[in-house]
Length: 171
Image (cartoon, rainbow, N blue to C red):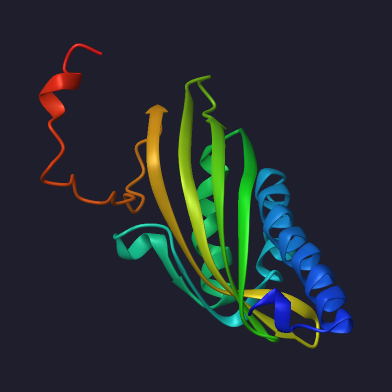
């Protein structure tokens, strides 16, 4: 939507919607870190689709499947998920797309740590209970340590043919 065409009431509602959507995204991180999967899945629509990676075990159809699939997170004794760079684009008054960056730290029972750097690409819808995530796809920008999960890899733009990378070989 073009901000210039919105009246003041619409602008105020959109501002509140942005705050509500960002709260949903942040609550996901918080509930995952404390492993409150009941509250976490309430952030999603009943018919949600969540795609963390190309393996079928990393794709969930519906809240109950998501809850069951996220039980794998118990293999970590501690996690810390940090969300930033949240961008929200409204498709209509009742649907929005959001992109956000994630820094996710994980620790195994033996003390080995793993870090994931990535992004969430979400479709959210307004429901009678508030904004909910209808679709989520996670992309991995990078990882280190003991993080070996097969998360969707973020694809960059192809290198333009007029770029000479050899001049950057020494830096």
